[in-house]
Image: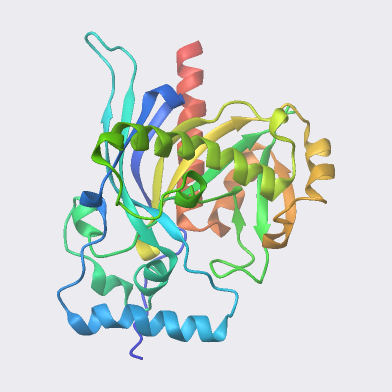
Amino acid sequence: MEKEVSGIDPSSFTLLVSCPSGLSPTQVSVTFSDTYDRISHPDINLENSISEIWEQRSQNNKSLFNGKKFRYGGCTLHNGGGSDPEPRLCLQLGLTDYRTFVGTNLSPLWERFLVPSTDDPVLCQHTSSPLGNGAVVETLDNKIIVLQRSNNVGEFPGHFVFPGGHPEPQEIGIASHQYDKELTDSINGEVSREMFDSIIREVVEEIGVPPSSLGFPAFIGISRRDLNVRPAAFFFIKCSLDSKEVQQFYSSAQDGYESTQLYAVSMVDLQNMTSTMPGCHRGGFALYKSMVESKKNNIT
């Protein structure tokens, strides 16, 4: 198959939305609709390459599984004012799957799926763009948890990342858009809750700490890796354990195979590690830094 090499820095990123005040679940809503599903590319050969790449990858890696994912289709942010002083965010989500992600965003031809536009939903209308998630977890002794990815993972082996993964449609019983329209509000609410439930689940599975040690997640924004236009929502979570206790729990983490080492680092050390982070996670650090600076400014 034809290959193209991108000259984009793997650690470069774009911030799609920043919420430095940190949004609670009551401030984040979801519109889940097929309106935000991927649009097929008009180039039939490029469109057919999705299946070709998946067949090739799945033959080489028998553990690949084509699960459903939520597709990021944009968002609207209301910064507060007037009768509603609180900032509020509405996420616009569709459905996609891992197969299409591998065949578009992770394809060597991924740049050909893009539409020239400064509007992100238009730019990425032909890509799978599943919405990932990541957590900036702060320990009781004010250290931040960072994982080093194992060499067995598909994306960015050996790189530093925050714990995270994806919100999962199957966790709330969604397999398609085929549901009674009277349930639309209920479905939107369930998807919104899954945004917050999933990041707690990912942290527990990846670093092994008990759920009771984690505070409520605060949504701080969405970062997109410029390479492969990969979007991820980031959350700030306070942990009631100190860094030594977290290290002890990590040794028995359920998804420990995805990483080889856990680091509990200071803000300065974390900043130095960002050059070896994938762009979406480096953007997660930028969102966290913005939150920290916002809190300082509010105190002073």
